[in-house]
Length: 103
Image 1 (tube, rainbow, N blue to C red):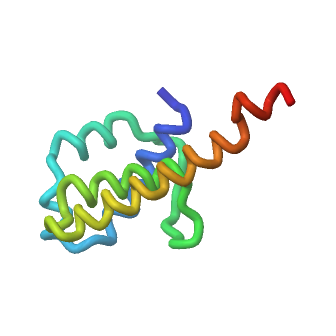
Image 2: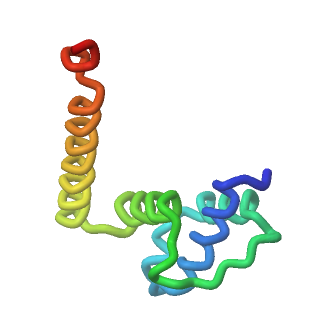
């Protein structure tokens, strides 16, 4: 299973090496084992804060939100994610507005 997600799992595992151990231990072992099982073993990723794929950022965000963040942080993350979703929906409506497509 070598695909984009496999590369993302490789990146996630590498980045998780840099978080505090007490935070790492909050992530269920099944998640880590899943990433280990399906990572791209031929892909060599060296952590660089400036070079992280969008999918890897999404996986890390969900891991943080689901297992590490406190309630206040979870609320903030959910608000930001919801706001981003609303912005994307607005842009789609502007772009694909059925009233203006046939004008």
